[in-house]
Image (spheres, rainbow, N blue to C red):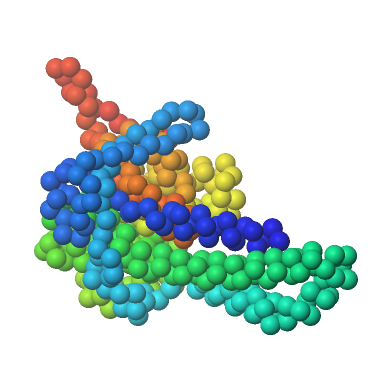
Length: 361
């Protein structure tokens, strides 16, 4: 019973959140107005804020925008994306569909054999009225649970493919100038949706740069390279296996670092809300700052822990930290966070003093 109520609560909460308009930040108003992917729905800027555990309140400016309905911002429908990239975590989707089918069958059984079930319930409940009420309540709950499971499966599929493709385009649009980018990193590249979007942008701008995808295993890296070949951007893509907590790259190496729905998975073996998991996620952010060149840009789309990321980026003294409004993905809150790494030189009075920041701290 508790499980059924939990599923109902999740579905209702996600439906309410899905009604919110997705918004995206831009460094300035001119860049927002030049974007062809989005249309402005509010002329004035709004803001979003977070409260850290230590009581410090962060506030950042955002602009309200929305994309055209129908296809993704890349002009593709989900079938085209699925044909190239397939679906990660397919077992999760199959499990949700299986649960939906089970609840559907149970609800049909309650509907067809309602009289017999009421007779059986009268053996447990002395009053026939209460027996009918109990049977009707359980039958209704199984039907609602089936709807919730179908909704959860649809939300998972949408977040994994069409929404992921949209977020990739939005992340790419956040970087104002790709022509000067020589090296970019996609942290946790997965099947390569974001990786190939960056590569396509480098190709379209005539850049000679390359984007490196960091995969968790060799098999994933090979699969990502196959999708790059299908997208026709294989000359702009390299992929290697590595640990995001100890990036196999030197300091100040990349002009741009991006990531999509990955950082929140770090440390989950310790428990999502454990202190150990949080410490490992913060270590990843430190590694991102370390490999990013001075003046380089970092953009992340991630779930749940964005407030922690903002606080850590503040501690690392990142500049231009910007946060998007809430976007529902995988039935939870998600945001896009961008930042810029400051130069190592800080002007103090008439003299310039070199300050070496410790990104690993």
